Length: 514
Image 1 (tube, helix red, strand yellow):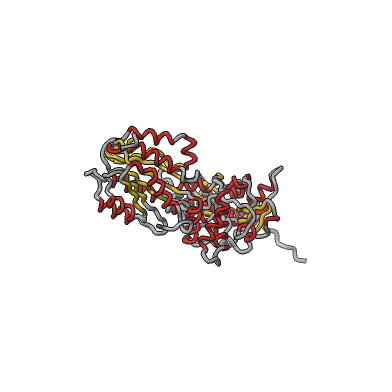
Image 2: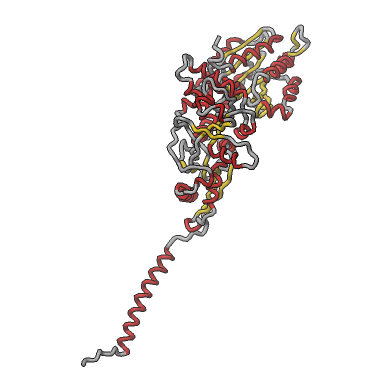
């Protein structure tokens, strides 16, 4: 019998050393790899501003540990209309890394409002269809019966330029009238009902005395879940209609590390499964109408509701102090009275800013803003009408018209709003007599450069008194698709002012050009 050889102590020692060397080498490689790996000493801060309907989802995802990927997320809920205002303001530097509005339509509007660096589209991370919220199902079973021709239900709408659900309903109304002999006229007739139940904010529709109104399915479900709430029946559209698509867009001001973190977080959002918990659905195809269709639809709505955005430019030169025979009032007093009457032509939601012009009113400038842009309702609540009366005693200087008109027009163009009739109104009793201003030729050339057929912005020129240069006002107005209205007798300024605004605010087919 052969016995196995025993390893001598030196052989055992060498074997142990060999094993230890191999282990040490492996450990050494692991340690070196870890030392070489980049360390995250300062995670990128990704700030997300999201529409309330999606903010909860993103907030839940943000609670997950993301430090291993070297970024951290902060989510804040904010209505898309508020975010848009902030992004369109170049002076506001408080900008998020990511914006998630409830609809891609907001991205388009942001660009139209001056935030041209905002991407035109984003990555949809959820969806919610637009439905009709119905209080009494007996009023109709589908959209055609509820808001189409012959509908018996009283319907309501919010501003379709600021509420994607209301815009969807407006597009549906237009589709219902396509086969009529005069589709535009039929659309206007059909919209007069909901225009009478107009809501400043979409949230107000839930408490208005209407039978039906558009809303997202998510909002209807949330309303129905509230204790004691009157239940609403959500009615889905019979044909595919644009819904809420919650686009995720990384804004251009984001730094490189923020952008990387935002893209990693997007992957988490795209992989989220528990949408039903928040009344949402997974992303779906959302066929949006082309921008031209949206623009035309909103212009029809603006014509029906007479909502506008106006910069009113009032002449306060010294000649406005002249007393008008038979009236006992100055030209300025009559002009102010006409302006006050003109306010009554507008819906409370119309936005107005008031400028005055003469010569050297603000340093070298011939113009100065008296009232910042706000709705008629806000001006009245703040008592801003008193500002009109206060300018009666300030008339002084010459007529620096050209510089003033161009500055007002540039401001109106930069802040042009969809869904409103955008106007620059100029009221004067004279002609440009400032030798240091731009020439008439330069004014007309600059106005021509600012024209955009898809974004009409007419000038209404209103002249009073024998010193008005009718040709000057006409050329200036017609260069923008507007009109000039003049009267030799300043006593008739009130009537001419009302005629001018009524003509420009009344949109076809509700009224025809004269």
